Length: 109
Image (cartoon, rainbow, N blue to C red; front, side, top):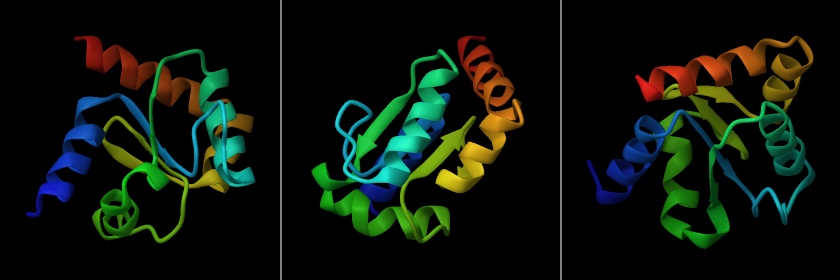
């Protein structure tokens, strides 16, 4: 496994909620990243955000790691949840909040 794949694995497994996005929640660089990070923020828990433009290696290798071709990518509890559409759908159904709270709770145990 390459170093960058190990880094991604550590980020995903070491944090209850991770979003790999274009930009940051404060300064998103695309609408999809903006909406996905807003949905996560609305859940009221801290989450790791990784600006894919700050790390070319992550940008190039994350799609191989996750088997998901586009950004943003949201991981909860070490599992890929998906991109913007899935995250927004889960948020609207009230499921995202439950998933985030459960992952944070599990992480603190």
